[in-house]
Image 1 (cartoon, rainbow, N blue to C red):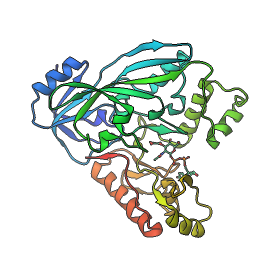
Image 2: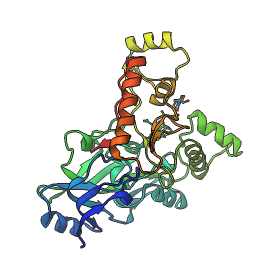
Image 3: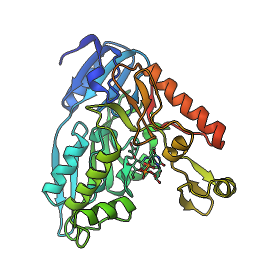
Image 4: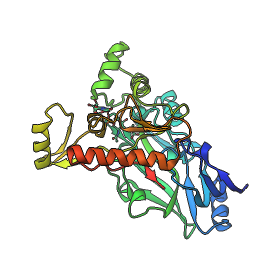
Length: 338
Ligand code: EPU
């Protein structure tokens, strides 16, 4: 196992931020990981996988370990469903494509989400009415301090909107090594209620009896039309969560901004799209040097070339402050800021 000293991790974060790791190694198997943790070159360990949810504002003073564990294994199969074990280092979208090829349904709405399988549970990735938790059975984790492995159930993962126990009580405690998911076989239960999906299925003439592949293709085309490809323009997808407000706040807000889109979650909770709030604050397409807000989706902060993490953070802070002043709503980043 190689250990690189003082090396740039620009290729390993989707913002393309050029910061150095004190030490950097890649782990390909559980045994590698145990060895690396036992013989680490620094008292601090920093685990990354796809690096697609990270804003790095400084060098990382730690032994950075990238999880590259590979493998998709069919655990059980019945007439109606399959259970798969997927290693943490598998690319998420490649997994979606693999499932489509095998006619396994459940994650087609999560097409083209950047990043690797191991980070999917951390923020309970979601798009177009589906979240990882809908197919999640459990995950295998290695406890960093004891090097013991555990299986964590969906309940133990405490999934919420773009959050889980890995972002709260168990932050920094475990390395996720694999996930176990339950997928459907035909006939699938498709999730096509999102207006955009309906529209694209119609445009593609696949709205009558869509397959999971048709849904995936619709999602891919919607995402490509709004969201920048991190290989071309550094970004980390939605930078902020959509804020939730209570009904009193919402009623006053709605009276003032009747055209604002919203989602009712419970009788007392409403979600307001952060992208709309940012656009109405006049910041869509805003740019300072190489850091800016995407011109097609205001929820995405982009690196036009050589922006530093600090410059990108300045943009995020400007967004938070401007939205707060205009709407009295606080935006919470969904990205992990280091
Ligand atoms: N909107 C604007 N201006 C913008 C962006 C959005 O007015 O610049 C409005 C839209 O017109 C729409 C509403 O806001 O009425 C919602 O927009 P959209 O459907 O594009 O979804 P979103 O709330 O911006 C969320 C997720 C995305 C996910 C999409 C589709 C969060 C933080 N983001 O975005 O997730 O793909 O829904 O389900 O929940 C990600 O997490 O990285 C991500 C891309």
